[in-house]
Image 1 (cartoon, rainbow, N blue to C red):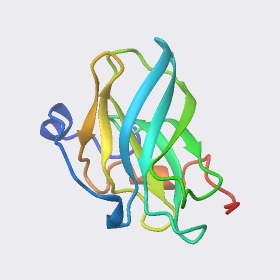
Image 2: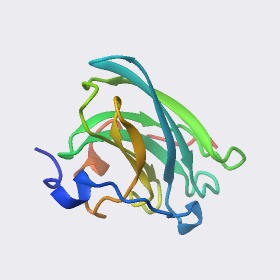
Image 3: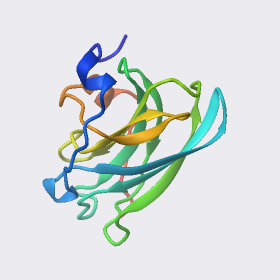
Image 4: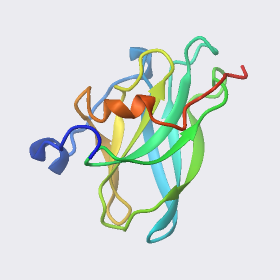
Length: 149
């Protein structure tokens, strides 16, 4: 198992949050899914305080409630003039009732913004996770190799 075990109170009851992108962290503000059980694609909307390659949202990912990386989309450039922005990622091999946490990562600052937590069958809501939840994923591939602009 990667990361920290879930805290029942935290993961069983999502908490509404309001961590604005101006906090220096990337916030996931919307999630939608397409596909079939065991093979979903997701569309994730992120608000981030990108200023260029020196600080930008460099990936978004889906993580199990146990901290396992389920899928990741590496972002190849900053989105200074496109906020919020929406990107898709495939390869999410979960069942409709599996709990999934969707979060984004900043090249400077890392994790810590608003996440979305839920299931394909019940939908997603804004939630908080501990700051060090699955922090070991920060070094797990795939990782960005360069920023185009």
